[in-house]
Figure: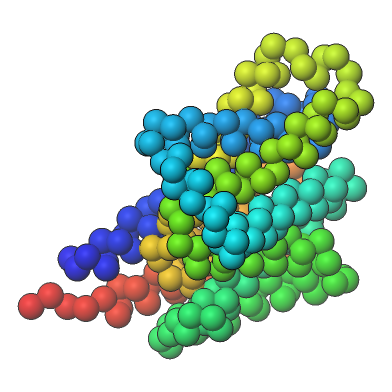
Length: 293
């Protein structure tokens, strides 16, 4: 196996692991359902930054972090990434509180398609016949979901586009995943601390058990995003897009069999198309695999 193939395999495995973590993470965040979601987001940023800083100190990369502050263009790019991920979290929280869960779910299905198309548009990634067929099947499924939803899903499109653009930019950043993840959280650190200090919250919010969950939430935030930053540089965006279908599929099963939430007919229809598209995509990998001599 060539070095390039090894790199792609490592990136794919990292991606799968990330989406598995994100897929089951709702079970963890439910432990903080009594806390304001805005407080949860602020603490995610704070403790993720602390975790990344400890890793940087351990790896003796502090000098490299100082160099980023001298790179105005690189710093601006990282700031854009920080704003994108923050806006995604904020829209997500607002949508959940506004009972727009179906749009949140729909956004999770639209996002991989956007990433696949970005790979084609910005990196010239090529699709063979089977991959084209799989893409058409996936688009058809998502189109049916949007049609059955009955209106233009602005929230879903916002959630999907912010993370798709985030993925695109992360692929172009030259710094290591640890450095970029630390800088993203560091740039949002002061506003997050000020928010926690001045946000009117009941005293029960800051009980000892919640502090433990806040710290664990920082790890659950920082570590997967660090792996994602590493993975997105190693694999094609089109492959990354298909792997992202793992996330909504896991959330679907979690909602259906664990949380016992009602799944709409539109989601079932869309899922059948998405799963079929992923199956065709997997088949295309084996069909086009180069034969060893």
